[in-house]
Image 1 (cartoon, rainbow, N blue to C red):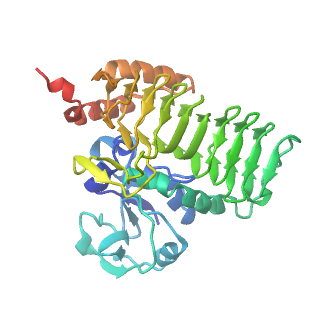
Image 2 (image 1 turned 60 degrees about the vertical axis):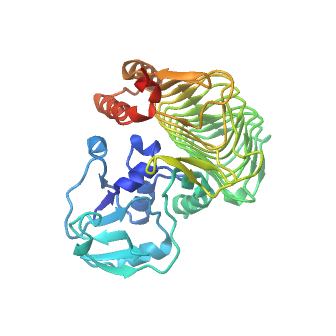
Image 3 (image 1 turned 90 degrees about the vertical axis):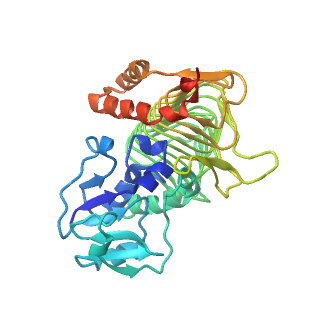
Length: 398
């Protein structure tokens, strides 16, 4: 059996700007990305994507057959659903409130739903439908992924005598982790530290928390829980209920809460975001599908930032701000709460950050990690530049 992740155009739009550069199934929530979760649950090493055409080269489609398992949009696995999947025959699908969750067969269930006989799933499911679902479900998914990754394995030891640990049974370290004079409190949720990570002096970490391999927690950092990073990240200052993709940094003081940062992002020193309105009203965020602000239903809601975006020192973001791909934010005051891709500026206005200049910066940044900005990456970014032009309203002024 092989897996194909199918996404609807609605799911792609509702999860922009994060899905500008990746399929829905490649979104990170908890310790793992959605595709990694399914692969581990089903013990499958390879999978493919039925995603947007311009992403298909980087995220290839694999040939479907009668034994192919299709997983739709941002559905997250759970034991009950996995059990039902193991009992599926070719031509069967599992639905929830008339939406296909998974199907087994050669045809994409989003394109040919009539090809499948459906069975309603009565248990609860978790699904990533909007960008804010990522941080909303992050604590839950850290707990789920922690069990998936660590069950039956033994943690490396914490050998530093000056590090204080609470709930040691809920802490797992991969090999090569360095910890000096930190406080790790896993009484309220697990703490997972990836291979060759470094936790520097004076860091305060409260679970649920997870960090990918080769990442760093800077001196004096305060991590308030429900937070996770991908590989090769550096985090500092005060962070609460947030997700960092791989290769993104917030290395200095400043607050980040209820937020998601894509890959290759960097927050300058003293960058802060608001995650709570002064009147305590629920927060609205930009919805690319409707082209308007949507009610999140959440009282705490911070910053969503697409890949390759950066902030200068002292940047501040208002509650419920969305920043697109390859933008550079700077200056005094709060910028607008929807900042399009390839924007350069802040509260006093924006200019266009042209792809040629964005490529130069991205290539320099990636070479620091011994990686290159490939032509495939450039093609994706060029597509995003054209697709997002409608939001750069200053370009249309006479």
